[in-house]
Image (cartoon, rainbow, N blue to C red):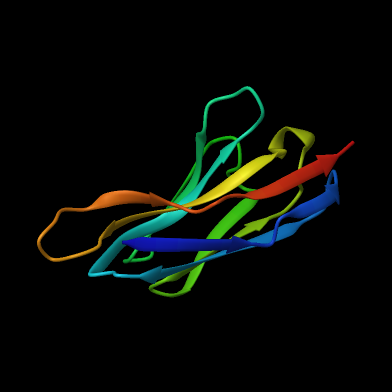
Length: 120
């Protein structure tokens, strides 16, 4: 199985910045993509950003131009969040679409989440 460990969450004032990180470990045959989702209290989990192994990034419209996803190796992904707004307050979850063993197909794996709180 694949394990994801997240860090970098915290409390910031509106207009500030945070950088989240996520590292994958465990039994990994292939990681197809890594990215981020978020979930605010009482709301559905929503897509934030994703980056595949070829370096192609995709962003939700709500964060486009403010957030940047990057990877420094095949198993680590970052989310640079600039000009944060109060609406960005949520638990941010790392996600990977990966193949754990060659006998199985790809599936989604999730981290434990890291809290991001943006104050007024």
